[in-house]
Structure formats: structure tokens, C-alpha cells
Length: 341
Figure (cartoon, rainbow, N blue to C red):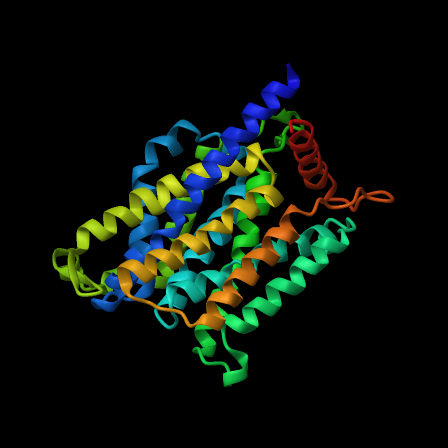
């Protein structure tokens, strides 16, 4: 009975993770034409997050108790998982190809293992270490280091910043699924994932409003069109896709999948986002990568897959304070997944 429920939960989680990867993967190919049409990358990010926040306002009102119960979680999710990831990624694709930006961003699975090892102080397997080495080596091929760093250095740093913020997305999504304590010391149930997303988007929109200063944006561009490898697409269609599919749907399915699986397992599936984005950029934007870059991208994803799918070793001694709960939750989820096979 328990095994059957575990199998169903894992299957549903994997399905949602795949949906999230597809939705997130389409954001870059929709955003880049808007940027090339004249919109500043930060303005596109602000439109994306602010539009999604408006849609999620009814959800935020329904879960308004979260402001009192989990203020730190909401602030962290808004700053890192929403504002940080999106701002760094959109700024990166304005300087380097979409596929390259995603491949750099997907060093995040390897960085999650660093979080497990150095923050939660849990040993990781040798396979995980090999996966990290492969991911870094593959990245060297993607950026063609032998050619003197063929891509814009700032663009690569921005993509790496997106990777660091994405670690926060996985860790906070997992941490948000745990019980907490209210201001009166009573146990508080895990917050509803859609409530966390709604307030994360609101926090992200407020932060980006200060940074992006949308009052200086050329709003007339949204009534025009943008080019996609020779084709003309209305700007509002691209923006609608970014807000509804690549943000609301992507975050909703992604956070729920992390809770149903674990940061490690969800991170493996999320690596498909890079593949989806690269293929879409190839087909829709005409961004072709060289053979060494394609091989390097495959190695990055292989390394990330190995690193994420390698189950961390159980702690040999007491787990560090602050990391034990998340470590235990991740380990129990992985154990449940193994038992269901």
C-alpha cells in the first residue's frame, strides 16, 4: 500500500518536473527576440515577474498567513529563486547564445552537491564527485577555453550567477516543504507551494521594480513585433508565453515536483531544460552550436545527471544544525523513491 502510494507520488513528481523543464526551457527563446527588438533585459524580466505576480495575487491573498509564518522563506524565494535567477539569465542571453547560458546555468546540479557536502556536512559519493568533474570539463568545451574564452566573459559570469541563484531555488523549494514553528512556538504545517510561489513573485517584482526602473521602458515596443529567425511574431504573444507558461506554470509545477521528489532528483530532470532550450533556440532562433560545444553540452548534462542521481552517503555523525532537517527530508524522499522501484 505504502509502496504503491510512493510509486504514484514519484510518478506524479517526475511528470511535473518534466512539465516544469519544458516550460522553463521556452523562456529564453521567447525573451531573446523581445530583447533584440529593443527591450532592456531587466525590463523583460520585470514584465515577466510582475505579470505573473498580478496573476497570482488571488492565491497570495488566500495564503496571506504565510507572511506571518514564513517571512524568511518568502523573502529568500523572491530574491534568489525569482529575481536573481531571472535577472541573471535574461542578462546573460542578451550577450551569449541561449543554449550556452542554460548549459552554464546547469552547473547548479553540481553546486547542489556542494551545498549537501559543505553546508549540510554530509559526505557525497565518489560518483557525485566524478559527475562534478565531468560537468566542469564539459563546460570548458562549451565556452571553448582553447580559443581564449570565445564568449563574452560578463555573459558567462551572469549565467554562473543564475546557476548560484538556482541552487537557492532547489534548496528553498525543499526547505519550504518542511514543518516550521510560528512566533508563538507552535508547530506550523508546511506552507502551500502555490502560496510560496505567489509571494516569491511579489517579492521578486518589488525588488526588480527598484532595479529595472520600468517607468523608463519604451512601452510602445509591446504593441509591435519581434523577429524569430526571419519570422515575425507579435510582441504580446511572446510576453504572454513568458508570463503564463514560462513563469506561472513553470514555477508552480517545479516547486511541487521538488517537494514530491527531492532537490537531487528534481535537479536531474531539470537538466532537460538545457536540452529543450538549446533545441528550441536552434529551431526558432537559428542559434547553431559547433560540434565541440554540442559534445561539451552533452558532457555537462551527463556530469550533472551523475552528480544529482548519486545518493549522498548517510552522515557518519551528528548533522550540523540548520542542515539536518533538509538533509533528513531529502534522504527520506530518496529512500522512498528507491523503495518504490
